Each structure stands twice: as C-alpha cells, then as structure tokens.
Length: 498
Image 1 (cartoon, rainbow, N blue to C red):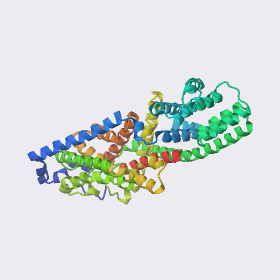
Image 2 (cartoon, rainbow, N blue to C red):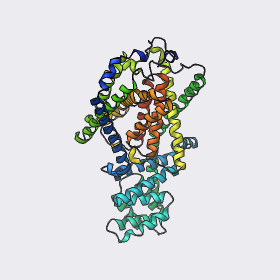
Image 3 (cartoon, rainbow, N blue to C red):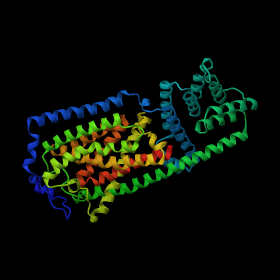
Image 4 (tube, rainbow, N blue to C red):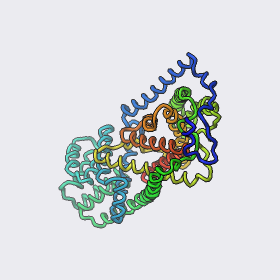
C-alpha cells in the first residue's frame, strides 16, 4: 500500500502503517517444501468441506432435516394464515404496507400450497392431507380439494371421515343441524385449535346455517389474527423505520462521497492489508481447514440436545484461523486485533458509525425487497426449512437465549473476522474491489448451504459488508449490521411462530 493511499481519508488520531514495515522474516515459515504440502492438503480439505455443503444442500431432502416436519409446517402455515386474517381487519394503509414489505397474500398462499403438497408427497401423513385440502378450499381451489378427497372413501380410516368433512364443507352437499353436530364433534377430535380447525368449523357452520357457532368461531379467528398480526406489525414498523432513516443516511453518503473521500473512514490500515498476500493465503488455507475439521467433529460427536456446546462451535472453529493470523500476519506488521481490524472506534467517530450502520442496513433491506419482488414475479421461493429454527420456536428460555447469542453475537463477530477481515482483505491485495468482494461473498454464501434465493440474499449481505469494510477500514460497522440482520430474522421467526 502506497504512502498516498494511506494518507487519503486518514482519521486524526491514528498512526499510519505502511506495508513496507512488515518484517521479511515472517515469510520464511511458509516457503519450505513441507509448508507447500501442508497448504495443498489444507486446500483439499477446504474444497471438500465446501463440496460437502453444496452436496448436502442440493441432494439431501429438506424435510429430512426435521424430526417433525408436519408439526413445523402446520405451525408455520397456521400462523401465516392467521396473520393474514388479522391483516384483513386492519386499515387499508397497513394492508398496503404489509403487502409492500412482505409480499402479497396470494403469493404466501401459493407457497403454503406448494409446501403442503411436498409434505404430502414425502410423508403421506393423513392429517397433512386433510390440512392441504382445507388450504385448497380456503384458497379458492375447492374443485381441486373435492377431486382429491373423492379417492379417500376407499382408503383406511380416518381418510373416509376426512373426505366427508371436506366434501361437506366445500362441496354441494346439504347439511342439517344433526349431521353438522356429528361432523363438528369429529373435527374437534381430529384437529387441534388453530387456523385449520377454525376455518373448517366455520365452513361447516355456514353450510348448516348455524349462526351461533359461526359467530363464535369467527370471533376466535379475529382475536387470534389480531394477536399474531400485532407482533408482526411491530416488527414491520421497526424495519420500516430502519429503512427510512438508513435511506436518508445512504443518500447523504452518496451525495457527500464525491466531495469528501474520507466521509466513511473510521480506521487505518484497512484494506488492502499491510501483510504479504502469500502468507495470508497460507494462513487462510490452514486456519480454514482446521476450522472445518473442528466443525465436523462438533457435528459428529457433540450431543444434539446440548445447545450450549453447539454454540461454542463457531468461536472454537475460528480460533485456529485467528491464532495463525495473529502470529503470521498481524504481529509481524506491528498490529494486534484491535488496530489490525479496526475494532476500536474513537468517540469522535461514534456518530459517523451509527449513520454508516443504518445506511448499510437500509441497503440490505432494499436489496431484500428487490429480490423478493423479482422472486415473486418468477415464482421462486426459498424453502421454509431454511429459516424455520426449532430452537427459536419451541425451545425454553435458556436454550433460546443461547441460540440468540450464537446468531446475534458469535456469528457476526467471527464470520466478519474470517470472511471480511481475512478472506476479503487478502483477495483485495490481488484484485480490485468488485471481484474481491464478489469472490469472498460467494464463498460466504456457499458456506451457509442455502438454496438459490438464500444464496443470493447472503451474497448481497456479504458484498455490502465487504464494501463497508473497504470504505471504513473497520470491521465494526459490518459486525453491527450483520448482528442487526440476524436479529431481525430471529425476531421475525419468533414474532410469527413462538
């Protein structure tokens, strides 16, 4: 890094660090023939780990990742439909806002139908078949529901009874009060209270003109819909506030960036880093390979129910990489973790930091919104198993707290150190910003093992956090934005499903 490059945007109070100050002795440990063999083996381990993640995400049926996929999907679809019921009772501006931010009700119902059809094909669960038929009937596909249940009469119990419930509720059959009471009793024994039960019970009551029961069920539906929608509404308003304030900050940054090149600078040296790229590559390969081995060991031997031990996998898997980085990269350059990665921000820059974080969060939300609209227009969806987390939904408070610590604290800190502080920074010594950011963000997205929509979402986030590290010279803004992003996702799951 040249003297002039370091001088641009040099914040007052920070000493300049020149790449020429790196000790030449630091290159010796990685130039022997044995060292080359170790690096090659480490590269093979890393490639194998990424290949395993890709193979796992592409070939393993997603429903096999859950012990009770029928229970999980029933909860998710029920709450989503209840939120829609509550939204229909809200003012028009709230309905418009929810559709603009989350997507249309029709798209959500179409997703739910696809997911239930997949569940029925995979498990053949009788209750899932009944719920699919109810969902079809409530989504305007009564003909499909009737056509499906017409084959149930010849099946074993309880399918004939389920067929009678659906044909009576959504078909042309007449229904007297006596038969209605029999079917209502059977329904109460079949389905627990919730969206599926309420809507099928209401249909039966309508068919028999049972106004008293219909009023009771509709009141229960309205109360439940308002409860679910209440939490979702709070979260939507919070995200909207972040979007508006952050967009103002983002526009201000764009407007002032052409006038002041140091408008975002928080720390030096930043990127490209003041250490040799060859040593950095060796550190990445070795530390990454050791981290992959530790992760596999945790997944293989750590008890699944021990959430506390599982949460330690993230910091422990990253310790070898960080230790090697300190010994071979930071220390020879006269740096430590604090000044090497910009982990200390002077008070004078706190206001600037807050504005930068809000701007990055807003950019992330805008990107998610665009991706959501494009995916909806192309009928693309991310599978529900990618964001349904049993610990966030069903776990007791102590386990929930550990899960939040893992997602909101450990993951942002250690992933930013590894993928932006080291991987992106080392790539930046050889490439310009866009290819370096794209490569590092792509590897970051692959490591998460999501499908196409999830991959693009993580790719966009990783690209933004690389950009903000490039501009500020500090990992702090990316860590905070990463933590806020994960927190919003966790809160969305908890607000809807917990």
